[in-house]
Image (cartoon, rainbow, N blue to C red; front, side, top):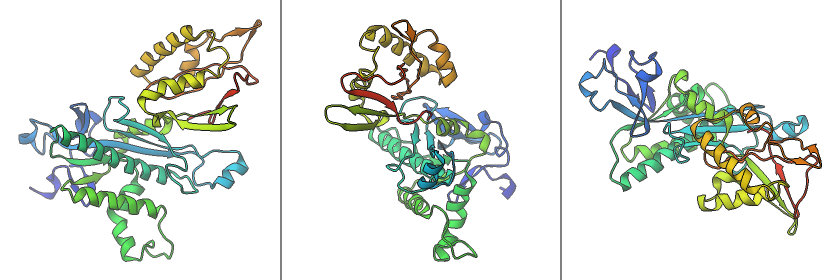
Length: 348
């Protein structure tokens, strides 16, 4: 087979698409088999193997960062927040184990600067972790199939960094080529290399890269974020409880949400009425991701009244798996039983 007709393959951790697939439309390159994303075989390069149609298993990753590169002190001085996050998707299904969107805080990444490249690298690492988790499940249930893995990232810096420059940095004493300064985010590149080596030692080939137009789902996950941080001040203990709902066990999520909602003045009075609307919203959001403007339209006219005065509407997003709970509250904040509901971030 001539070099110009090589099929799509993984070489030196890089996904190399055949010339037919390089500029192909999305349905010709990627697909879904058993509810998992895959890279398809090319009909023209491998017509004899198209019965199954799968070349590689695929997970899409992306990362984003507003206010890129500023230190915490600089952000505080300017009154800004970094808003860094990554998104990972192994399936079109919105199951929480197969689609993840994570806000990057000090717990996720203790680095004192948030950048787009670090967000991209953290997304790739999260994608590999998801691959390993799903592979373990498949082995457990005897459903594993021997396909290579592809991390579909459109970050040229990450792809070239690990496939082309990493070995050159090593040879140069972990310094940039023709420079006496270390590469940016070298700690995460070390972690990425170690993770890839541990997977490759199990006989699994892993490649990175995808044309940008094929990575829209992961990009949406990275830019919207899925975990709203909620702060609840408990008056008796004077303590501040800060949790991510996505980190709470399924059996405890509703009780935690009820605890948060109990601080909203109108909730106890109209709990049954609003719970039914919450359930209705859950069903709707499971079908499609609603924007903030659409949610405001949905809740127009639902603001409670108190002493003839319409309370100012505030929408707080409590992201719990795949649904949102929308809460109204009065301004200034009202306290009830020593508790106050306060959003840590206006927009995630």
